Amino acid sequence: MRPPHLPDLAVLAQLEPTPGATETEIIVPREEFATAVQNACGAAEPGPVCTFVFERTNNELLASIAGQLIPSVFRILLIVAIAWIANRVMKRSIRRFVRRMSERGSGRLGTLRERAPLKDTAPIDLARTTMRTETIAGVLRSVGTFVIWTIALVMILGVFRINLGPLIAGAGIVGIALGFGAQNLVKDFLSGIFMLLEDQYGVGDIVNLGEATGVVEGVSLRTTRVRDVMGTLWHVPNGEIRRVGNSSQLWSRALLDVGVAYETDVDEASAIIKEVADVMADEEMWSSSFVEKTEVWGVQALAADEVTIRVVAKVKPAKQWAIERELRARIKRAFDERGIEIPFPQRTVWVRQDSSREPSGDGWGPLAHNSDAEVEPEQPSPADPHGP
Image (cartoon, rainbow, N blue to C red):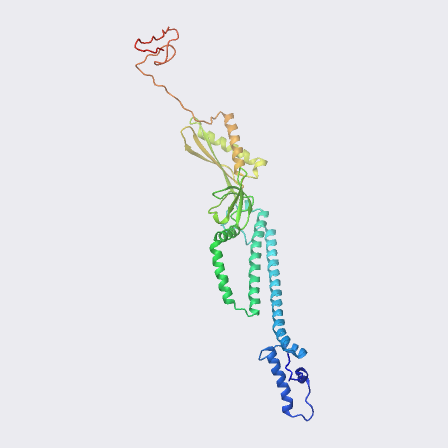
């Protein structure tokens, strides 16, 4: 409040010097006004807001509050507005990037593995690329939003002249505690990010994760969902995945080991297998599944009961099992028509005859008897009290 002994300083500051007034009479009111403004605003150079309010109200408390609060509120609103605009621009840029990636079907977030010669024959599905880029875009948006608003919060705390040293130290201690307590969770998230960036697998891929093998039904930053052939849905934390075998990338190989009898001409059997495979590869139903012509590699093994001939075919991803089943059926029919035997385990048993025994009747050894011979029943010995 204005001291009671002072006149209205706002009025004094605006008064024109009266004619004939001495220099002292002019300077004193202005010095009193400047001192009052400094007392109200608490600064050697009072701000325009505090000075304006004091001039209008002559209230030191109100001028002091206005001088501190209004500029701070203005700075906070400016910081929030800039952060909001930056966040919107960041999200829009990421959205445009994802749209461009989806339209091209591939781009800077493509696979990091080396280019394979058959990459053009088995391109990554557009839907899978879109899903992967959308997931990565979500991660980038979350990280960007966190960084922008964290910087804005630090700047807002600086407006209020809050000492950030203890706050940062406390946050560091809390972060270390959370890091020890949630290190597995952090590990899962980091593993998920790298899996997405490297395109190790995607939804619809057939993978072997060690503990679970099947079709990928969902991929998130923390877990991967895999449904096996029995219908069981496995939720595997990304941090626990040590290796990934993907049967759905680039190309696959159909491999058959066909067994024939030792009496079979190997060259003839190989020619029949090659003919059957080539006919199948030329059919409209199956031609799109083959990447290269089928190859007969020759004799793979000489087993106890068969000669094994290996035949392979490079096919589209995840098509190898259907092609293997169809080839087996066709090879079996072709062998049956040509009279080529597919052996199965057999065992020949030789019975050794004891030379001290003579064959009797239609049998051998002491257990065989002549059916025409009359055999008298054995009589009990007198020493045997029980008898037969």
